[in-house]
Image 1: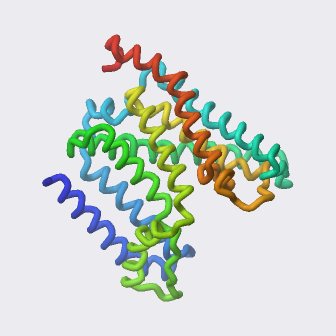
Image 2: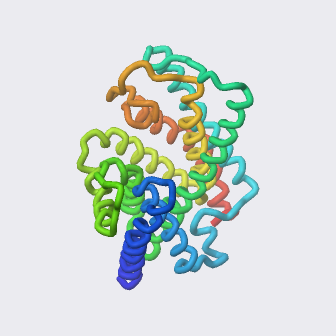
Image 3: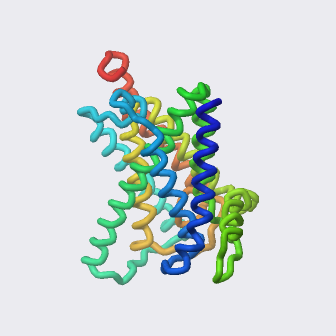
Amino acid sequence: MKSFLKFILIFGLILLLSALLAPWLFSFLPFKFERIFNRLVMIFSLTSIVLFVRIRREDWDQYGLRCYPWSFSEFLKGFVAGVLILVALTVYRVGAGFSQVSFSGMTAWGIAVKLIQFTFSGLLIALIEEFFFRGFTDQSLRIRFRFPVLLATGVTSLFYASLHFVTQKKIWIDQTPDFFDSLKLMASPFLSLTQPGIWPAFTGLFLFGIVLHHLRLSTQSLYAGMGLHAGCVFFVKSDGIFVDGIQAPSLWMGSKVFYDGMAGWFSILLLGVILHLWISPKTFKKNVQGNVL
């Protein structure tokens, strides 16, 4: 209970400080007010983890970050599986007439630069999100608050999915925002979840979180999940260079983000099965032989 109250207090201070600073920074920074507020919350949250969370050397195992000789292989398998399943889904989209091949008119050099940018973006997002959700958050729920594994998996996956929609509901703010406008932004995540249109995408991200969590538990590390996460982010970002949507999003096919339709949900579950068969049994065998645990 003491740790929980400390968490609530720190997060409340983060929101308060962000609300106070956002209007002042908006007066001279060339960014939207909402973006400034969200970035402040993220920066202060990461800073608080560095200042208040003491990660000991032996905690690297618990957070899934210890590197083993097979860690890169797990990462690579996750990355390749994520890209290939999305390539297959894209081929289906094009063949079924939901999308069409249409190069963006960029030069070969421009495409290469974009692909490099998307690769680094995917790696960075995967590293941060997998450590925060499947590492730090899951470990805190299971060890500090003694959540059962299934409950911790569900809560972490719900948390992961919901945070992708914190700015979905637009809050009207004029050109002279103040502290009270910052308070309005705090309510936007809850208002976003009241919109029925987000639930297909929310479902897909929740399923993706479950698959990532399974990889974390079965391999006792974050590397397979990081690879899968990075590969999927890379492909979703780069898909627009080569393919254009020609039909409105549907419940079956979803939109260009892949995970907001039934075909995307099926692909996510298929990814989980493929990676379970490709990675988990081998790693589990190493675990029970005492190489990891």
